[in-house]
Image (cartoon, rainbow, N blue to C red):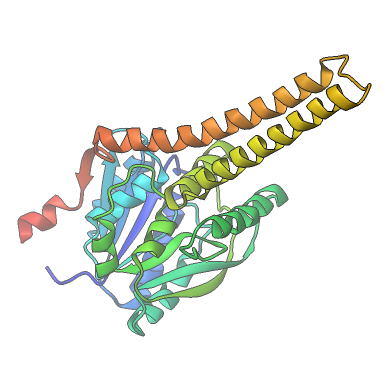
Length: 317
């Protein structure tokens, strides 16, 4: 079998309304590029017909591969599985919802041929998204940049091309709570951006509601920074100093003035504030301890139920 130049990893979860259109547009783009390629769909435990649709398409299109999970493991894990199975010299990660247009891929391949190892898509506009989502995304990248030293590119997602050596380096990173755009930036190599306008979702509903967005944000912050722990230390010193000076003030009032404390309102208010901050600090510690617990269990990142399109090539080889 001839060497595959480009592997396209497409994670999908309940995308039966859009998956055929995704396939058609990807196939059209890659056929026009005249490069050998594979479309590697990763079914992340979909409850609809997403996997069946791709399996049917694979019967007539030998470029299709399907990795079918035993259950839902999450978007970042699905992308990881795609990179594990990808065989191309360049690997493109793109979601199935068509918000990231496949027509940008040839521009990424051009940058790759120029010698760049990572070509990430940078969003100029985000069409069809609410003000809340745009604002929180803007805020997240600025907070993440302030808390980390890795200079993760702003206004980017997982839509990007990575070279084979970057993909191989990523396989050595086995952490469970994965923030792939940060991990790819961490491994280094020569990187550049391709700007594009993010389109409105072609069909279906978003697979990243607020709960999952918060999970991804916490993974990004706690996986790439220990500054929240330093913040807890600074707050602790500040509160201790404040408490000490407040104690001196109370003693001064008691010994040298007639203004003695007659009620408990102020004490209760101070206790509530201090206890609230203490719980926040414990929560931060809990996030790091929970991540340590996930790592030491040593469970696999994902379990594959079925693979379609790869066994045949292995038999031919």
